Every structure is written in structure tokens, then in C-alpha cells.
Length: 250
Length: 322
Image 1 (cartoon, one colour):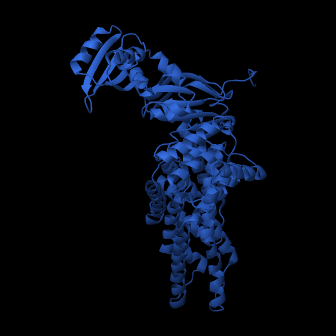
Image 2 (cartoon, rainbow over the protein chains, first blue to last red):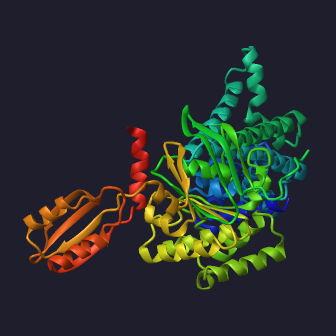
Image 3 (cartoon, rainbow over the protein chains, first blue to last red):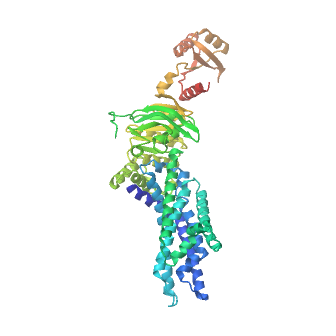
């Protein structure tokens, strides 16, 4: 337990030791801020009937952030240690493989949450400065936050797995981005052909992250969506563990 | 569950260890034993299996076949106990460049399972031991190679391991730094069993009490440096520089029955430099000096070459090829 705590702290601190961590946080907030501006513009100029929380995750910037942030946060986790050789000094201390995997994951995930944290004040900012008529449904805000949190868990696990496969941070980042974006685009298929009902259409509807986020943003916490993200997180953490263990039998 | 252990199991016990890397054996049917308290050198060219063996002993890799025990604990089934007892410094001494020296050592001590007060004391100890006081607040990435090496050694030692495994600890250092590291290793050998690897022969020759010579994934020799030298037999060459005409010297060496082979070359001044190989390992020096005195030849050098490990190494590894 001490080892897990020590490792997690080091993982998290690693983000703040260099400029990288601050650049990521600034980038996230810049793009989310742009997303907020887009929404404000819409609310300002046009007759618009969707609540703020629902519009927010439909902007391009929102998804740009979500798809970009996982690769840049997680690409370092294993790949950097493998390339620099510190993976060897790490794995020859009496820590277990699972502790290492969990520490890398938790470290990345906590950093992800920190980078997104300021976003929580957006809706209240809006409410404070906007016209009286604008009411923010705080329930929807929290369910959207939950959605982003679940999404983050899955993508951090995916990123850790990609990073554990290679010594190159670039390869890890591209892999995470490709798989993440691929999954996201698959979700679009659900919207593209809504009339034609085939087996894959049902499947695609279930994995459409856009739909998931829409549900969360309207205040619906669907347990199927929650399970979707939680189980994928678990699966990719398991894959990561197997990948870390593979040095023994490879 | 636990087997009854003998009173003091050897520090390292390797039995028929084999490791395949993508279908090719990195080490093959490796067996050797290292008793407590020795400084053991793994010697061999790159790719001979030294690093692979060290990584298995340190608990980083698993063997394909065979077993290895460290202080009586199996490296495969009891890996955590082994890792607790081993201090490992991998090749090129990888460190976290973005951490400060003291912070890094503290992090490592905690990872290795020391509690807070103990880790504080131990970090204090190793900082003093390796003279890192002046750089303890510096970033590791900014340190010179010599300091980095000392940080690596301090890390390997911070949890007071019984066995130290150092893979090429002096590679890339300048001669002065090499001497410092060598001194540290000798010092460590007093209280620990130390395993170092090198492909540079003088390196291990001066530090180690026992040498294991690796060649193509197997140990081809396991002995003390002196023992290895003796096992090679006599044939100590004599070099002598005399002031005498070359033809006369040729004749003189021909006449001496103990000399198997000789060579005479001109040297500076009127001197000649002769290389004499004895027939059966005899020390020729008394005979040669007596001859020089009898003939009145001025003598300015008379040396007997010892076999260097270089010769031993070439000799042993050649045998395989023949």
C-alpha cells in the first residue's frame, strides 16, 4: 500500500515537474473556454432552446479536448520509463506489477481530473453573469461531470495500455488517439443511418460516446453507460497488467 | 510449505538456467554458485549473456528453463523476497532526470519498503557514504556522469541489500571516476556480495575475487583471477635488452636448451631486444642474467610477462571455435 501511494505520488508529481503538465492544463482550459464561448455566442444571438449543459458537449472543441488529452497525458507512463531504462530499476524493487499499473493509471487519472476541474465553475459563471432567465440545472452539470469523469477513466486506461506496448511516446500517443478517435467516429455511424436497422446499428448505438455524453448532459445517468465505461476501464487495465507481465514470458 | 533450509545457503545458486529471446538462446544451461561475501566479475563480450543473467537474478526477467536462487529464495516463485535482498544497477544506470538527488533516493527507499524514519536515516547514510552532500538538492539530469554513477550506487544500496548486482558500473566514465567507483565497489565488497559485469578485463581483474567468463550464453570458466592464470599453464615470455651483436645473440639463444623460441630485434642505441619463450614454463631470468654477466654484455631490461586476463580470455574463447 505504501508502495502504491509512493508511486502514485511520483506519477502525479511527474506531471508538474516539467512545463508539459502546465501546457496540457492550459491547452485543456483554452479549448474548453473556446467551447464555452461558442455556447455563449449561440445563447446570445440566436433563438436557442437547448440548455447550456446540453449544448456544451456538442461543440467541436469539447471533443477535440477529450480526444487529444488522453494521448498527451498517458503517452509517457510506460514508454518513457522503458526508453530511459528506469522501467528496469522500477520493476526490480519489491513492488508488484499490479501496483505499478494502478499507480500509473491513478496518477494519470488524477491529473486528468485536475486539468478539467476549473470547468466546474463554467455553468455558475454563466448563471452569474447572464440574464436572469438563464437557469443552470445543477443536476445536469453533475451528471455531465460524471460522464466526463467516466470517459476519462476509460481513456486513461486505454492510454496506459498503449504506452505499455512500446518504448516510443509518439507511437503510444498516436495509438491512443487512433483508437479513441476510431471509437468516436464509429459512434457517428449511429446518427448517419438512423432508418436502416441492422445488427451493427444496434451495436454502434451502444458504443456511441456522443450519445452517452448527450444522455449525461441532459441529466440522465444510465447505468448501461456507466457500466460501459467502467468495464472498458477494467478491461484495459487488465490488458496493461498483462503487457507489463509479458516481459517475463516473452 | 517452506523447505527446510540449510544453515547458510550460498548467495547465488544457478542451476541449468536457459533464457530464450525470440527463439534464440541468450543464455543456455547456465550453472554456477557464488558464496557469501565475494566480489564476482562477469566477464565476456557484449551479447554473451551477462546482462540477461543479471536481470534474471534481479527479478526483472524470468528464465525459460532452470532455476536460480538468491540467498535461498527462488527468483521465479519468491521474486519479492529476492528483490528485497538485491540492489540492482542496470546497464547505463538509468535515473529519473527530473528529480532531485535526495528526493530520488527517498522515493527509491520508500519503494523498496523502508518505513519513513528508516528511509530518512538510510538516505542520510548513503548521501554521506557516496559524498553526495553537495549535490543532494540538484536535479539528477544536471549531474556529471561520475555523480550520476554515485547516485546509482547509493540507490542500489539504500535498502541494505545482501547482494549487489551492478551491470557495467564503470562504462563511460573517465579514468579518475573509474578509480573512484572501483574504490567504492571494493569497499562494498567487505559487507556485501557484489556481482559486477564488464567486457573490459583489467576492470574486473583488480576488483574481483572470482571471475566467471561468459561466452555465447554459457560460463566457460569460473575461478579466481590467479587460478585462471595458472590453469593456462606456463609459457611466460621473457623480454631482455642487451648490448651485443645480433648474430652473437642468435647463437647464444640457440645454444640454450630451455628456450623453445626466440626473436631478436634492434632497439635504441646499440642494444637488441629479445623475446624468449621457455620450453616448459621455466623462469629463464636467472640463466639470462648469468649469461649476460659472463659475457660482459650490458643489460638494461629483463622482464617476465605474466599472462593477462586478455590472454586467458582469448585462449578460452578460441578453444570453442577450433
